[in-house]
Length: 345
Image (cartoon, rainbow, N blue to C red):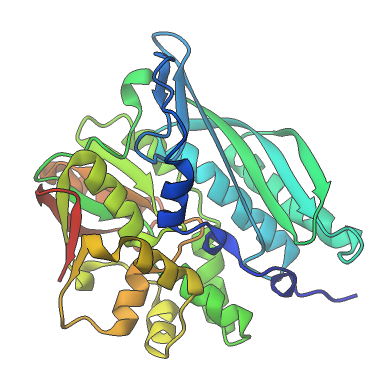
């Protein structure tokens, strides 16, 4: 029996995320964990993972991420979901040590072999990262869901938060934008083989540079760009650091097929929800077209690291990223004084 995984779910990848404004309302009544002094990072700044200090040399990073299929190939879906989940550990500056699988599958409508391929894809990425899938939990669910709990370690003094950027910092994005637009085209069976290859190469590329970026004093803040789009995750840095980002659209790295498809009108529903959540905090140049606007809010699945660093270190970081295979890595803007806004020209 041939099954298109994307037809079994109402959303896909990080586009499944609850809209930022709705999530803020949901969490507004949750108390901050101030009674736990060893909790270095909690929910206070919407960071990528929790970080708990164990001793003077070690802190543990804990995160979880899961979603519904963004592609139809089961093995590829497993790889993408696992890469995306491990990204949060790297975004905090850590190294993963183990993972647990989160599995929800419609047992009566999805062949067992397909489910096995999803799990195999996730296990293959974890093996690439040098960690085991040490267990997990599974349920019978109406839509296919897969992801990981990911644990990592980091030195307490090398944690890279999303709220420690400094005025004058340069912004670097390590992967090209446009995964959500490619996924929208795929769901409508309008994505060609080259576009699929671009999408798969980006979404299965582990964000391992986060580990060495953590060792650099010149790197002040870091996050990864996922379901809230570039603007949403950049606003997280700006709000937490009380700065304004100045972004030049023409400097943004874009996946080649995504540019063309965006110009043809492909867009995700999550992109529009994202803008409704935070558009009042963004100033867009009137010369920007709608397709450019859509790329700025496009939900990324397993997106790139967004790095705020001192200007004198930026060129060396980009060169090293290029040398390690992150061909789209580029300087995309700078941070200046201001109160939590993004300006795009």
